[in-house]
Image 1 (spheres, helix red, strand yellow):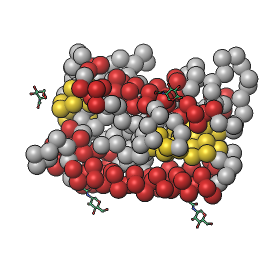
Image 2 (cartoon, helix red, strand yellow):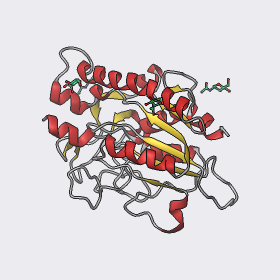
Image 3 (spheres, helix red, strand yellow):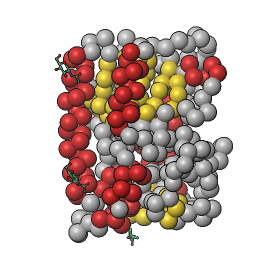
Image 4 (tube, helix red, strand yellow):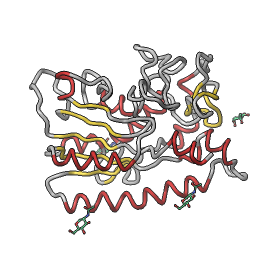
Length: 278
Ligand SMILES: *[C@@H]1O[C@H](CO)[C@@H](O)[C@H](O)[C@H]1NC(C)=O
Ligand SMILES: *[C@@H]1O[C@H](CO)[C@@H](O)[C@H](O)[C@H]1NC(C)=O
Ligand SMILES: *[C@@H]1O[C@H](CO)[C@@H](O)[C@H](O)[C@H]1NC(C)=O
Ligand SMILES: *[C@@H]1O[C@H](CO)[C@@H](O)[C@H](O)[C@H]1NC(C)=O
């Protein structure tokens, strides 16, 4: 079971890079010239579609609300990074690396993959610093112990979530925060920020948190069953499948990452501020 968990949820950490790349100065310019995304299935937008892995979702009901249908996003519609790309003012979502070609890659690429490993990501991050990326957002791990999948695998022993998983997420985050600080100190020409967006308790109250919108059993047991019929009130569910949030929840996460003033959710900058820094 442990290896399955490792395969499917890895660390929901995304490194996003707002770098000093070329841009063509066209009208309605986005707030940053380009945007590169690294991460796992929470950010993947199709990189796994042609890989030999169980962690792929280019089938209905994934994408049921997305104009292009099932693209490989682990959501009914957009993922959190798609929403942030919109907030930053880009006209299009970042192309998945697997399909990226031509001029579109000058604006950014999404390298996130449902089986990504953190080591690869850190490696690429440093490579991008070498290529001129100067703004970095590193995401902490959310409450992985509260996913329906974690609860079904570990049980909760009376508490609402799997405490030992959340404790480990917190331990990870508590080491990531000082790392971000150290990177800001060491690399003075670059800006790093730590993000761990968490919607407010009021927001949580208006959502269903204790069940999944789709019928799960696909993949390793945590993904939607192919062609199954999902819930109709998708905007009220936190969890689309047993691990990944709905579009509605992703929007709240993105909104917080972009705008929050809470230092526990964004430190030292939210994305809006990071994007504006000279
Ligand atoms: C939590 O982290 C510890 C130390 O790395 C590890 O031994 C343990 O297996 C982790 N717990 C879970 C539930 O993954
Ligand atoms: C920051 O610089 C110090 C001193 O050179 C070094 O020991 C440390 O490993 C660096 N930290 C990072 C995260 O690069
Ligand atoms: C989920 O929570 C609601 C409200 O607390 C409750 O009525 C419902 O029975 C719960 N559903 C499950 C599957 O536990
Ligand atoms: C954050 O602080 C700024 C400046 O004080 C304020 O304009 C903005 O409305 C605040 N944002 C939120 C989401 O509270």
